[in-house]
Image (cartoon, rainbow, N blue to C red; front, side, top):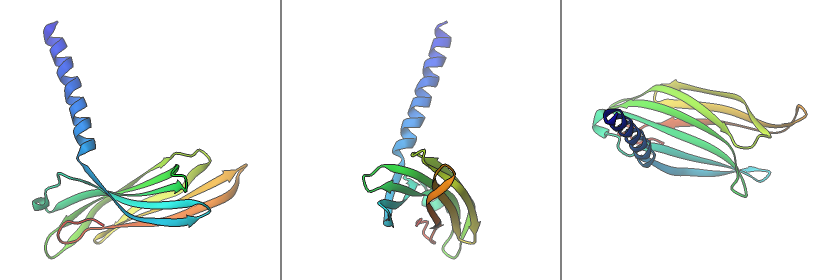
Length: 154
């Protein structure tokens, strides 16, 4: 019985530690704030694991585009996650994926995609606010993520 209790306690501690360590190992930097009109802001930021090893020649990060009201209420977030292989003479995007999150139920993502080409990752999205099937507002953006030969993401 003691052995089972110790195993369960160890598992709980491992899960708790890994979740805490992951949350603290992300560096987030706001790149730009865009006025979208009608009281909306588009905030672009990059999240990069702070423990990334530059010597590995591989870098993964996430570029976020968050849409907020002028009162700082989040409406939606589009996340573009990409991996890059880099060296002093070349950079290649090896993968690109996306995820979406809606915080205001009046809005919905009607289009979203991610793709890679050469040294860049692209994320495209459209969100719309509809009432009774009629589109009242629409926001479309393309997010581009790049990596330089030093492993710096932008």
